[in-house]
Image 1 (cartoon, each protein chain N blue to C red):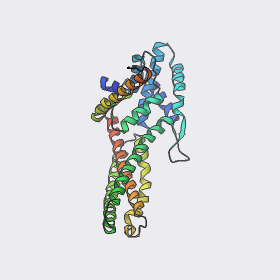
Image 2: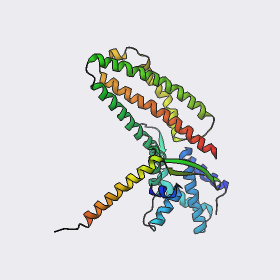
Image 3: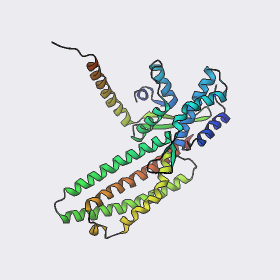
Image 4: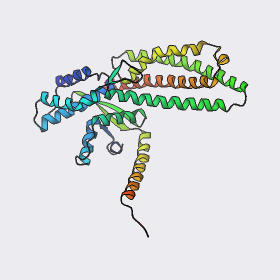
Length: 217
Length: 96
C-alpha cells in the first residue's frame, strides 16, 4: 500500500516541526519513515495514523535536540548534528595536516632571511587564495540563491561569510610578517586559514552538486 | 560497504531490511547508527549519492565511488584478519 501525496506531506511537515529542515537529510528520512509506515499498513493492517505514531515514536531519539558544536544557543536534532560533526572532523584533520606541513617546512629553513622570505610568500599566496575564495563564494552564492533548497552544506557555507571578515586583518596588514613576534604561530594560523578557505569552497560546491541532483528529479 | 559492492546502489531502508534478512533478524541496524555511518562515508568520499523519484517521494541512493570500491577490499581484508585473530584467541589450537 503506497502512501498518498498528502500523507507524505504530513510526514514532511512533522519532520520540519522536529527540526529536520535540511533537504539532504530530510529526503532520506521521509523515504525511510514512509517505507516503515507502508510496511506497518500492509503487514499489520494498521491505519495510517496509528502506523505514523508508532514509527515516529521509534525515531524519537534521533530527533532529540542536541547543542551545536561551538555554540551555546543553537540546537540541532541528533541526526543533523552528527552530519555537521563529520564535516567538522574532516575540516580539523585537513587544518592540522596543512598546518603541520607548513610548520615543518618553516622549521627546516636554514636562516632567518629564508624564514622571512617564507612568511612573505605564504602571505602572498594567502592573499590570492583569500580573494579567490571570496570570488568563488559569491559565484556559488549566486548559483545557490536560484533555489530554495536547504542543506547542511548550505547552512555551514552561509555561516562562513561573517567569519571571512576575521581574515581581513591578516590580508591587508603589510606589517604582519615584519612585526610577527611569534613566527611559528603566524605560520600555524595561515595553515588553519588556508584549510578554512578550502573547506568553504568545498561546502558551497557540495550544496551546488546536491541542488543539481535534486532538480534532475 | 560490502552490501553496496554487491548490490550497486541501495537506499537506507533497503540496507536495514537486507541486513535483517541476511542475519535472520539477529542484527537490527537502527537509523541512528545507519545514517551517521553513511554520512561519514559520504564525507570521506567513499560513497556517492543519487536521487530518484519513487512513489510520490524522493529516494536517496548510496553507491560506492571508485575510491570506495578499493577501500571496501582493504577494509574487508582487515576485517577478515581481525576475525581470524579473534577466532584463534577464542579457540586456540595448541601445537606440541
